[in-house]
Image 1 (cartoon, rainbow, N blue to C red):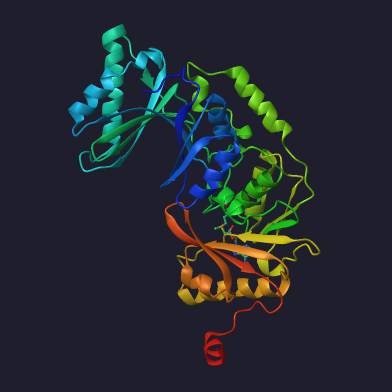
Image 2 (cartoon, rainbow, N blue to C red):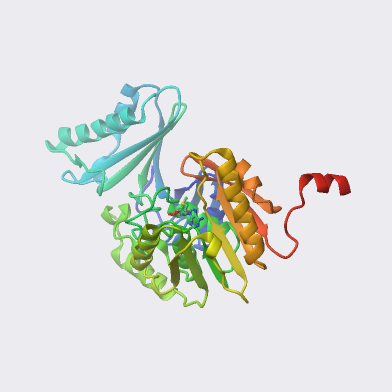
Length: 395
Ligand SMILES: C[S@@+](CC[C@H](N)C(=O)[O-])C[C@H]1O[C@@H](n2cnc3c(N)ncnc32)[C@H](O)[C@@H]1O
């Protein structure tokens, strides 16, 4: 069982599928040891300072969990009894608040909400027996956020040191339709292996998420600096002085940059929203935004340039229409983005083919529940892919 007095302990950072390798690198950089990749998670060891830094600085983690105990249960009665046996009063005040989240990969339990409810019942019943009083539930800002993960009959209980998901940075309080998750956007930027220099362009920027995450990355701004609350702040072992030191170090590590960040969108509303989000992130002076169609965009010249875009996937459009839209994107890139590297994410693989350029890298990512392709195109004169017919005839 986890003890707060231990110097080094085990943690699990959760993330989105396909971002695990980036998260491994991030955690290693922060001084985590025994870093191991799993499916949608990375396990690692570290002390309190590593736990705080993982919350403050990682761009691709969703939650930093501290595994607490494990047991076997095949039915609700066993689950209830095992949970009730735990000395929760060492971690939670009788007048405190708690939240329980459950994920299931088992046939023994069917409903995650039901498991959360049983877990909560067992905890509060223990308090009621001992103190005649009980903690209450607060799902927004609890003193203790607990996760229950059940695989077959193996139940793992963890403390959630983040509480609110880390993708909720705090700067994006307004959004356009179909915004990309901040963690996905940061992962997209980091997957390009960009050095943070030159020009970064998103010509269909919507609420500005990709541009903002790119600027945070290039300026080495820790995304957790925007957040006011983390789960660990309510824990009995919260080391406020250590946390403040790490926050001060993160602020001191911010770098000025002359990178050009350029965003545009065809709708005025999107640009208004992107501007408000960039302002909340303190990046309004860094990110230049304009309300124009992609067809009119002229990218900065004479610098190494990166275009990252998340065009509409066209679920509600006829296939010919979305195909010709993606063809226009390819034509525009070819015509005006000579020397640039472009990355396009889309769930519409058929439409991506219509871009008509040879992809030099093809990655898979998720945008929310949607499986997507994330393709890299290197743009230089002559990079247009030859028509399939011509290609096979000559080769
Ligand atoms: C999927 S959304 C982008 C979401 C964005 N990544 C975010 O996080 O909010 C696609 C955006 O492309 C814009 N768009 C569509 N066609 C465009 C065009 N021809 N030129 C410029 N923007 C366009 C839409 O207005 C929309 O904001």
